[in-house]
Length: 492
Image (cartoon, rainbow, N blue to C red; front, side, top):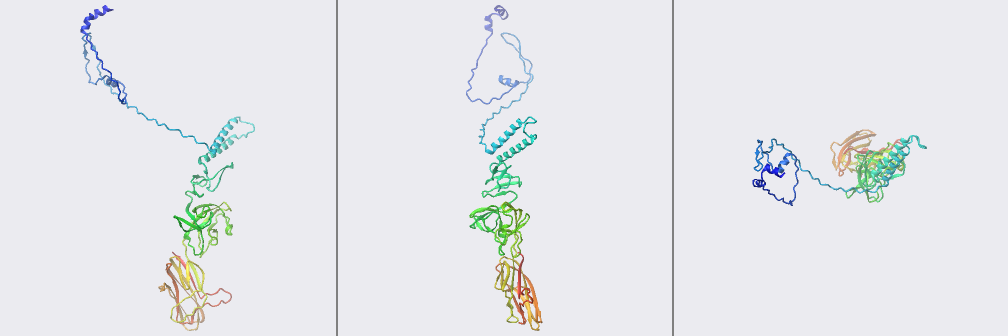
Protein backbone atom coordinates (compact mmCIF):
# COMPACT_ATOMS: atom_id res chain seq x y z
CA UNK A 1 0.00 0.00 0.00
CA UNK A 2 2.84 2.32 0.82
CA UNK A 3 4.57 1.73 -2.46
CA UNK A 4 1.47 2.33 -4.45
CA UNK A 5 0.92 5.63 -2.75
CA UNK A 6 4.54 6.52 -3.40
CA UNK A 7 4.36 5.65 -7.02
CA UNK A 8 1.26 7.77 -7.45
CA UNK A 9 2.30 10.89 -5.57
CA UNK A 10 6.06 10.63 -5.36
CA UNK A 11 8.36 10.44 -2.37
CA UNK A 12 7.16 11.44 1.08
CA UNK A 13 9.84 14.04 1.27
CA UNK A 14 8.63 15.61 -1.91
CA UNK A 15 5.11 15.72 -0.57
CA UNK A 16 6.32 17.45 2.48
CA UNK A 17 8.14 20.01 0.47
CA UNK A 18 5.43 20.79 -1.96
CA UNK A 19 2.47 20.74 0.51
CA UNK A 20 2.36 23.31 3.18
CA UNK A 21 -0.83 23.23 5.18
CA UNK A 22 -1.28 25.96 7.64
CA UNK A 23 -4.06 25.37 10.05
CA UNK A 24 -5.09 28.25 12.18
CA UNK A 25 -7.72 27.74 14.91
CA UNK A 26 -9.73 30.64 16.05
CA UNK A 27 -10.42 30.31 19.74
CA UNK A 28 -14.11 30.04 20.67
CA UNK A 29 -15.21 32.85 22.89
CA UNK A 30 -17.33 31.99 25.85
CA UNK A 31 -20.65 33.72 25.56
CA UNK A 32 -21.31 35.20 28.97
CA UNK A 33 -23.48 38.16 28.07
CA UNK A 34 -27.26 37.85 27.86
CA UNK A 35 -28.30 36.09 24.71
CA UNK A 36 -30.66 37.93 22.40
CA UNK A 37 -33.68 36.11 21.12
CA UNK A 38 -32.70 33.87 18.24
CA UNK A 39 -34.61 34.31 15.04
CA UNK A 40 -34.85 30.94 13.45
CA UNK A 41 -34.27 30.81 9.72
CA UNK A 42 -34.61 27.92 7.39
CA UNK A 43 -33.50 27.06 3.87
CA UNK A 44 -30.58 28.06 1.77
CA UNK A 45 -30.45 31.61 2.98
CA UNK A 46 -29.85 30.55 6.58
CA UNK A 47 -27.04 28.25 5.40
CA UNK A 48 -25.41 31.06 3.43
CA UNK A 49 -25.53 33.42 6.35
CA UNK A 50 -24.03 30.82 8.68
CA UNK A 51 -21.09 30.29 6.22
CA UNK A 52 -20.62 33.96 5.53
CA UNK A 53 -21.43 33.64 1.83
CA UNK A 54 -22.78 36.72 0.13
CA UNK A 55 -25.14 36.59 -2.77
CA UNK A 56 -23.40 37.31 -6.06
CA UNK A 57 -24.62 37.58 -9.58
CA UNK A 58 -24.55 34.54 -11.75
CA UNK A 59 -21.02 33.61 -12.96
CA UNK A 60 -19.46 30.96 -15.16
CA UNK A 61 -17.83 27.96 -13.48
CA UNK A 62 -14.25 28.75 -12.27
CA UNK A 63 -11.47 26.22 -12.25
CA UNK A 64 -9.38 26.18 -9.11
CA UNK A 65 -6.04 24.35 -9.09
CA UNK A 66 -4.50 22.82 -6.08
CA UNK A 67 -0.76 23.08 -6.44
CA UNK A 68 0.06 19.92 -4.56
CA UNK A 69 -2.49 17.61 -6.10
CA UNK A 70 -2.74 19.38 -9.45
CA UNK A 71 -6.26 18.10 -9.77
CA UNK A 72 -8.80 20.46 -11.32
CA UNK A 73 -11.78 20.88 -9.03
CA UNK A 74 -14.96 22.52 -10.12
CA UNK A 75 -16.85 24.31 -7.41
CA UNK A 76 -20.57 24.71 -7.88
CA UNK A 77 -21.74 28.24 -8.48
CA UNK A 78 -25.13 29.37 -7.32
CA UNK A 79 -27.36 29.86 -10.31
CA UNK A 80 -30.54 30.79 -8.47
CA UNK A 81 -31.06 32.45 -5.16
CA UNK A 82 -34.23 31.48 -3.39
CA UNK A 83 -35.42 34.08 -0.92
CA UNK A 84 -36.80 32.63 2.26
CA UNK A 85 -39.16 34.67 4.39
CA UNK A 86 -38.03 35.24 7.87
CA UNK A 87 -40.25 33.62 10.42
CA UNK A 88 -41.32 35.94 13.21
CA UNK A 89 -39.88 35.30 16.59
CA UNK A 90 -42.02 33.19 18.77
CA UNK A 91 -44.09 35.27 21.14
CA UNK A 92 -43.45 34.42 24.70
CA UNK A 93 -46.75 34.50 26.58
CA UNK A 94 -46.81 35.08 30.27
CA UNK A 95 -48.90 32.55 32.05
CA UNK A 96 -51.18 33.96 34.77
CA UNK A 97 -52.21 31.71 37.55
CA UNK A 98 -55.87 32.10 38.54
CA UNK A 99 -56.75 30.65 41.84
CA UNK A 100 -59.96 28.62 41.82
CA UNK A 101 -62.92 30.15 43.60
CA UNK A 102 -63.47 28.67 47.01
CA UNK A 103 -66.40 26.36 47.21
CA UNK A 104 -69.08 27.97 49.36
CA UNK A 105 -71.17 25.87 51.71
CA UNK A 106 -74.45 24.85 50.16
CA UNK A 107 -77.68 26.18 51.52
CA UNK A 108 -80.50 23.95 52.69
CA UNK A 109 -82.53 24.84 49.61
CA UNK A 110 -79.65 23.96 47.26
CA UNK A 111 -79.16 20.63 49.03
CA UNK A 112 -82.88 19.96 48.72
CA UNK A 113 -82.79 20.63 44.97
CA UNK A 114 -79.80 18.30 44.52
CA UNK A 115 -81.47 15.59 46.60
CA UNK A 116 -84.66 15.77 44.54
CA UNK A 117 -82.65 15.55 41.30
CA UNK A 118 -80.72 12.55 42.60
CA UNK A 119 -83.85 10.76 43.76
CA UNK A 120 -85.55 11.39 40.43
CA UNK A 121 -82.67 9.69 38.58
CA UNK A 122 -82.60 6.76 41.04
CA UNK A 123 -86.32 6.22 40.75
CA UNK A 124 -86.14 6.33 36.99
CA UNK A 125 -83.45 3.60 36.98
CA UNK A 126 -85.48 1.44 39.36
CA UNK A 127 -88.52 1.48 37.11
CA UNK A 128 -87.02 0.50 33.77
CA UNK A 129 -89.38 -2.47 33.72
CA UNK A 130 -92.36 -1.38 31.63
CA UNK A 131 -94.71 -2.91 34.20
CA UNK A 132 -93.07 -2.36 37.61
CA UNK A 133 -95.01 -3.65 40.59
CA UNK A 134 -97.09 -1.17 42.63
CA UNK A 135 -96.24 1.78 40.34
CA UNK A 136 -98.60 3.82 38.27
CA UNK A 137 -98.16 3.10 34.63
CA UNK A 138 -97.82 6.81 33.77
CA UNK A 139 -94.32 7.13 35.20
CA UNK A 140 -93.42 9.90 32.74
CA UNK A 141 -95.93 12.21 34.43
CA UNK A 142 -94.39 11.45 37.84
CA UNK A 143 -90.91 12.20 36.51
CA UNK A 144 -92.16 15.44 34.97
CA UNK A 145 -93.64 16.56 38.26
CA UNK A 146 -90.37 15.83 40.05
CA UNK A 147 -88.46 17.85 37.44
CA UNK A 148 -90.83 20.77 37.93
CA UNK A 149 -90.30 20.57 41.67
CA UNK A 150 -86.56 20.51 41.16
CA UNK A 151 -86.73 23.54 38.85
CA UNK A 152 -88.75 25.62 41.30
CA UNK A 153 -86.52 24.76 44.25
CA UNK A 154 -83.56 25.76 42.11
CA UNK A 155 -85.20 29.09 41.34
CA UNK A 156 -85.76 29.76 45.01
CA UNK A 157 -82.12 28.93 45.73
CA UNK A 158 -80.95 31.29 42.96
CA UNK A 159 -83.05 34.17 44.34
CA UNK A 160 -81.69 33.64 47.82
CA UNK A 161 -83.57 34.50 51.01
CA UNK A 162 -86.58 36.66 50.30
CA UNK A 163 -86.66 36.01 46.56
CA UNK A 164 -89.89 35.07 44.87
CA UNK A 165 -92.55 36.07 42.44
CA UNK A 166 -95.35 37.50 44.52
CA UNK A 167 -96.49 40.58 46.29
CA UNK A 168 -93.89 42.02 48.66
CA UNK A 169 -96.14 41.90 51.71
CA UNK A 170 -96.83 38.19 51.37
CA UNK A 171 -95.04 35.21 52.89
CA UNK A 172 -94.52 32.89 49.95
CA UNK A 173 -95.55 29.21 50.24
CA UNK A 174 -93.91 26.86 47.76
CA UNK A 175 -96.29 24.19 46.38
CA UNK A 176 -97.84 23.71 49.81
CA UNK A 177 -94.69 21.86 50.89
CA UNK A 178 -93.83 24.23 53.74
CA UNK A 179 -91.00 26.08 51.97
CA UNK A 180 -91.54 29.66 53.11
CA UNK A 181 -89.61 32.91 52.78
CA UNK A 182 -90.22 36.64 53.13
CA UNK A 183 -88.72 39.45 50.98
CA UNK A 184 -86.03 41.28 52.95
CA UNK A 185 -85.06 45.00 52.87
CA UNK A 186 -82.82 46.23 50.06
CA UNK A 187 -83.75 43.25 47.88
CA UNK A 188 -84.69 43.66 44.22
CA UNK A 189 -86.29 40.76 42.35
CA UNK A 190 -88.60 40.02 39.45
CA UNK A 191 -92.30 39.69 40.21
CA UNK A 192 -93.88 37.29 37.72
CA UNK A 193 -97.37 37.94 39.04
CA UNK A 194 -97.26 41.70 38.39
CA UNK A 195 -94.68 41.43 35.56
CA UNK A 196 -92.39 44.01 37.11
CA UNK A 197 -89.33 44.49 39.33
CA UNK A 198 -89.97 44.65 43.10
CA UNK A 199 -87.67 46.69 45.34
CA UNK A 200 -88.11 45.94 49.05
CA UNK A 201 -87.65 48.99 51.29
CA UNK A 202 -86.19 49.13 54.80
CA UNK A 203 -89.60 50.00 56.26
CA UNK A 204 -91.15 46.82 54.87
CA UNK A 205 -92.87 48.42 51.88
CA UNK A 206 -92.06 47.33 48.36
CA UNK A 207 -91.91 49.48 45.24
CA UNK A 208 -93.22 47.85 42.08
CA UNK A 209 -91.16 49.63 39.44
CA UNK A 210 -93.30 51.08 36.66
CA UNK A 211 -96.58 50.34 38.44
CA UNK A 212 -96.58 52.69 41.42
CA UNK A 213 -95.09 55.86 42.88
CA UNK A 214 -94.38 56.83 46.48
CA UNK A 215 -93.82 59.99 48.50
CA UNK A 216 -91.62 59.63 51.59
CA UNK A 217 -93.36 61.01 54.67
CA UNK A 218 -92.70 61.51 58.39
CA UNK A 219 -95.19 60.87 61.17
CA UNK A 220 -95.02 63.42 64.00
CA UNK A 221 -98.64 63.17 65.15
CA UNK A 222 -97.84 61.34 68.38
CA UNK A 223 -99.72 58.22 67.26
CA UNK A 224 -99.13 55.34 64.85
CA UNK A 225 -100.69 55.92 61.45
CA UNK A 226 -102.17 52.74 59.98
CA UNK A 227 -101.63 51.22 56.57
CA UNK A 228 -104.29 52.56 54.19
CA UNK A 229 -104.68 55.97 55.88
CA UNK A 230 -105.27 58.92 53.54
CA UNK A 231 -102.82 61.61 54.72
CA UNK A 232 -102.34 65.30 54.12
CA UNK A 233 -99.33 67.59 54.21
CA UNK A 234 -98.67 69.53 57.43
CA UNK A 235 -95.04 70.66 57.18
CA UNK A 236 -91.52 69.35 56.74
CA UNK A 237 -88.82 67.56 58.73
CA UNK A 238 -85.41 67.58 57.11
CA UNK A 239 -86.96 68.02 53.69
CA UNK A 240 -89.43 65.16 54.20
CA UNK A 241 -93.16 65.95 54.29
CA UNK A 242 -94.80 65.61 57.70
CA UNK A 243 -98.34 64.27 57.48
CA UNK A 244 -101.51 63.60 59.44
CA UNK A 245 -104.81 61.90 58.54
CA UNK A 246 -106.45 64.12 55.96
CA UNK A 247 -109.25 66.22 57.44
CA UNK A 248 -111.89 66.82 54.77
CA UNK A 249 -113.70 69.87 56.10
CA UNK A 250 -115.34 72.70 54.22
CA UNK A 251 -112.36 74.92 54.95
CA UNK A 252 -109.56 72.48 54.09
CA UNK A 253 -107.55 72.78 50.90
CA UNK A 254 -107.45 69.56 48.79
CA UNK A 255 -104.09 70.51 47.30
CA UNK A 256 -102.56 69.63 50.68
CA UNK A 257 -103.53 65.96 50.32
CA UNK A 258 -100.56 63.61 49.77
CA UNK A 259 -101.54 59.96 49.32
CA UNK A 260 -102.37 56.67 51.05
CA UNK A 261 -99.92 55.10 53.50
CA UNK A 262 -98.65 51.75 52.25
CA UNK A 263 -97.48 50.47 55.69
CA UNK A 264 -98.07 51.26 59.35
CA UNK A 265 -95.94 54.26 60.34
CA UNK A 266 -95.03 54.61 64.01
CA UNK A 267 -94.73 57.99 65.68
CA UNK A 268 -91.51 59.88 64.87
CA UNK A 269 -90.59 57.51 62.05
CA UNK A 270 -90.48 57.64 58.27
CA UNK A 271 -92.83 55.85 55.93
CA UNK A 272 -94.22 56.00 52.40
CA UNK A 273 -97.50 57.21 50.93
CA UNK A 274 -98.71 55.79 47.63
CA UNK A 275 -99.78 58.38 45.08
CA UNK A 276 -100.20 55.82 42.28
CA UNK A 277 -100.46 52.06 42.66
CA UNK A 278 -101.85 49.30 44.85
CA UNK A 279 -102.30 49.42 48.63
CA UNK A 280 -102.85 45.97 50.14
CA UNK A 281 -103.73 44.25 53.39
CA UNK A 282 -106.39 46.74 54.51
CA UNK A 283 -110.08 46.57 55.41
CA UNK A 284 -112.08 47.23 52.26
CA UNK A 285 -115.49 46.10 53.51
CA UNK A 286 -116.61 49.65 54.40
CA UNK A 287 -117.58 48.62 57.93
CA UNK A 288 -115.21 51.18 59.47
CA UNK A 289 -117.37 54.02 58.10
CA UNK A 290 -120.74 52.28 58.32
CA UNK A 291 -120.91 51.37 54.63
CA UNK A 292 -120.77 48.24 52.46
CA UNK A 293 -118.22 48.35 49.65
CA UNK A 294 -117.96 46.26 46.48
CA UNK A 295 -115.31 45.75 43.85
CA UNK A 296 -115.30 48.77 41.53
CA UNK A 297 -116.56 51.30 44.10
CA UNK A 298 -114.87 54.69 43.82
CA UNK A 299 -113.62 55.88 47.20
CA UNK A 300 -113.67 59.55 48.19
CA UNK A 301 -112.07 61.34 51.12
CA UNK A 302 -114.57 61.02 53.96
CA UNK A 303 -116.02 64.18 55.46
CA UNK A 304 -116.92 62.35 58.70
CA UNK A 305 -113.81 60.25 59.44
CA UNK A 306 -110.35 61.76 59.19
CA UNK A 307 -108.03 59.80 56.90
CA UNK A 308 -110.76 57.35 55.80
CA UNK A 309 -112.91 56.87 52.70
CA UNK A 310 -116.52 56.86 51.62
CA UNK A 311 -118.15 55.53 48.50
CA UNK A 312 -120.56 58.49 48.47
CA UNK A 313 -119.26 61.58 46.67
CA UNK A 314 -119.27 64.65 48.96
CA UNK A 315 -121.02 67.72 47.63
CA UNK A 316 -120.33 71.43 48.04
CA UNK A 317 -119.42 73.03 50.32
CA UNK A 318 -117.57 69.81 51.23
CA UNK A 319 -114.55 68.88 49.13
CA UNK A 320 -114.87 66.01 46.64
CA UNK A 321 -111.49 64.20 46.37
CA UNK A 322 -111.54 60.95 44.44
CA UNK A 323 -108.74 58.86 45.98
CA UNK A 324 -109.00 55.18 45.02
CA UNK A 325 -111.06 52.29 43.68
CA UNK A 326 -111.80 48.98 45.41
CA UNK A 327 -110.15 45.99 43.70
CA UNK A 328 -110.44 43.31 46.43
CA UNK A 329 -113.01 43.24 49.22
CA UNK A 330 -111.77 41.74 52.47
CA UNK A 331 -111.54 42.71 56.13
CA UNK A 332 -107.78 42.02 56.35
CA UNK A 333 -106.28 41.48 52.89
CA UNK A 334 -108.36 43.96 50.92
CA UNK A 335 -106.78 45.97 48.12
CA UNK A 336 -107.38 49.38 46.55
CA UNK A 337 -105.98 51.06 43.46
CA UNK A 338 -104.78 54.53 44.46
CA UNK A 339 -104.88 57.32 41.87
CA UNK A 340 -106.05 60.54 43.56
CA UNK A 341 -107.93 63.03 41.40
CA UNK A 342 -107.24 66.28 43.22
CA UNK A 343 -109.06 69.18 41.66
CA UNK A 344 -108.56 72.81 42.65
CA UNK A 345 -111.12 73.79 45.22
CA UNK A 346 -113.86 76.31 44.36
CA UNK A 347 -115.22 78.15 47.37
CA UNK A 348 -118.80 79.15 48.07
CA UNK A 349 -121.12 80.49 50.76
CA UNK A 350 -124.77 81.25 51.40
CA UNK A 351 -125.81 84.11 53.72
CA UNK A 352 -129.17 85.70 54.55
CA UNK A 353 -131.14 87.98 56.84
CA UNK A 354 -134.69 87.53 58.15
CA UNK A 355 -134.91 91.08 59.47
CA UNK A 356 -136.94 93.89 57.89
CA UNK A 357 -134.61 96.71 56.84
CA UNK A 358 -136.13 100.22 56.67
CA UNK A 359 -134.01 103.06 55.34
CA UNK A 360 -133.84 105.91 57.90
CA UNK A 361 -133.49 108.54 55.17
CA UNK A 362 -134.41 108.84 51.52
CA UNK A 363 -131.70 109.34 48.91
CA UNK A 364 -129.00 108.21 51.32
CA UNK A 365 -126.70 105.13 51.14
CA UNK A 366 -127.30 102.46 53.74
CA UNK A 367 -125.49 99.15 54.25
CA UNK A 368 -127.46 95.93 53.76
CA UNK A 369 -127.31 93.81 56.89
CA UNK A 370 -126.96 90.00 57.23
CA UNK A 371 -127.75 88.00 60.32
CA UNK A 372 -127.19 84.33 59.41
CA UNK A 373 -124.93 81.93 57.44
CA UNK A 374 -126.47 78.88 55.81
CA UNK A 375 -123.06 77.45 54.82
CA UNK A 376 -119.67 78.70 53.80
CA UNK A 377 -116.49 77.30 52.31
CA UNK A 378 -113.70 79.79 51.98
CA UNK A 379 -116.04 82.79 52.21
CA UNK A 380 -115.75 84.76 55.43
CA UNK A 381 -118.54 86.95 56.76
CA UNK A 382 -117.55 89.51 59.36
CA UNK A 383 -120.75 91.30 60.30
CA UNK A 384 -121.94 92.67 56.97
CA UNK A 385 -118.53 92.50 55.25
CA UNK A 386 -117.35 89.57 53.11
CA UNK A 387 -113.85 88.34 52.28
CA UNK A 388 -112.26 85.19 50.84
CA UNK A 389 -109.46 82.85 51.90
CA UNK A 390 -108.10 82.32 48.38
CA UNK A 391 -107.71 84.72 45.49
CA UNK A 392 -109.92 84.20 42.48
CA UNK A 393 -113.00 85.30 40.62
CA UNK A 394 -116.19 85.29 42.72
CA UNK A 395 -119.81 85.77 41.72
CA UNK A 396 -122.21 87.52 44.11
CA UNK A 397 -125.91 86.80 43.57
CA UNK A 398 -128.34 88.98 45.56
CA UNK A 399 -132.07 88.52 46.04
CA UNK A 400 -134.13 91.14 47.96
CA UNK A 401 -137.75 90.85 49.08
CA UNK A 402 -139.28 94.35 48.80
CA UNK A 403 -142.63 95.68 50.08
CA UNK A 404 -144.48 99.00 49.73
CA UNK A 405 -146.78 100.66 52.25
CA UNK A 406 -148.42 103.34 50.03
CA UNK A 407 -149.45 103.95 46.45
CA UNK A 408 -146.89 106.61 45.62
CA UNK A 409 -144.23 105.98 43.02
CA UNK A 410 -141.03 104.93 44.69
CA UNK A 411 -137.76 103.13 43.90
CA UNK A 412 -134.97 101.16 45.61
CA UNK A 413 -131.45 100.86 44.16
CA UNK A 414 -128.69 98.52 45.42
CA UNK A 415 -124.97 98.09 44.47
CA UNK A 416 -121.61 96.63 45.57
CA UNK A 417 -118.57 98.23 47.09
CA UNK A 418 -115.09 96.70 47.04
CA UNK A 419 -112.69 98.08 49.62
CA UNK A 420 -115.23 100.87 50.21
CA UNK A 421 -115.19 101.83 46.54
CA UNK A 422 -118.21 101.49 44.27
CA UNK A 423 -117.90 98.57 41.87
CA UNK A 424 -118.58 100.08 38.41
CA UNK A 425 -121.92 99.16 36.79
CA UNK A 426 -122.98 96.97 39.68
CA UNK A 427 -126.26 98.81 40.56
CA UNK A 428 -129.80 97.45 40.14
CA UNK A 429 -133.12 99.40 40.59
CA UNK A 430 -136.70 98.40 41.28
CA UNK A 431 -139.79 100.71 41.32
CA UNK A 432 -143.36 100.21 42.55
CA UNK A 433 -146.57 102.16 43.24
CA UNK A 434 -148.43 99.36 44.90
CA UNK A 435 -149.85 99.83 48.33
CA UNK A 436 -149.14 96.72 50.36
CA UNK A 437 -147.66 94.90 47.41
CA UNK A 438 -144.48 92.73 47.27
CA UNK A 439 -141.82 92.51 44.65
CA UNK A 440 -138.35 90.88 44.18
CA UNK A 441 -135.11 92.58 43.21
CA UNK A 442 -132.37 90.29 41.84
CA UNK A 443 -128.94 91.24 40.60
CA UNK A 444 -125.46 89.72 40.38
CA UNK A 445 -121.89 90.83 39.98
CA UNK A 446 -118.55 89.02 39.38
CA UNK A 447 -115.65 90.48 41.36
CA UNK A 448 -112.01 89.46 41.35
CA UNK A 449 -110.73 89.26 44.91
CA UNK A 450 -107.58 88.71 46.91
CA UNK A 451 -107.66 87.56 50.55
CA UNK A 452 -107.00 91.15 51.63
CA UNK A 453 -110.06 92.51 49.79
CA UNK A 454 -113.57 92.93 51.20
CA UNK A 455 -117.02 93.38 49.70
CA UNK A 456 -120.15 95.14 51.04
CA UNK A 457 -123.66 95.69 49.67
CA UNK A 458 -125.41 99.07 49.89
CA UNK A 459 -128.91 100.36 49.04
CA UNK A 460 -130.83 103.65 48.82
CA UNK A 461 -134.53 104.59 48.41
CA UNK A 462 -136.42 107.48 46.92
CA UNK A 463 -139.13 107.05 49.59
CA UNK A 464 -138.82 105.37 52.98
CA UNK A 465 -142.17 103.61 52.41
CA UNK A 466 -140.31 100.96 50.36
CA UNK A 467 -138.52 98.47 52.58
CA UNK A 468 -136.46 95.25 52.48
CA UNK A 469 -139.02 93.04 54.16
CA UNK A 470 -139.31 89.48 55.54
CA UNK A 471 -143.07 88.73 55.41
CA UNK A 472 -144.58 85.91 57.40
CA UNK A 473 -145.35 82.66 55.58
CA UNK A 474 -148.96 82.07 54.53
CA UNK A 475 -149.52 78.41 55.29
CA UNK A 476 -146.48 76.67 56.68
CA UNK A 477 -144.21 77.31 53.73
CA UNK A 478 -140.52 78.03 54.17
CA UNK A 479 -139.56 81.30 55.72
CA UNK A 480 -138.89 84.26 53.48
CA UNK A 481 -135.56 86.03 53.85
CA UNK A 482 -135.49 89.78 53.49
CA UNK A 483 -132.17 89.49 51.66
CA UNK A 484 -130.11 86.51 50.57
CA UNK A 485 -126.56 86.41 49.17
CA UNK A 486 -125.00 83.42 47.37
CA UNK A 487 -121.27 83.60 46.71
CA UNK A 488 -119.64 81.13 44.30
CA UNK A 489 -116.24 80.85 42.66
CA UNK A 490 -116.52 80.14 38.92
CA UNK A 491 -112.81 80.46 38.25
CA UNK A 492 -109.45 80.54 40.03
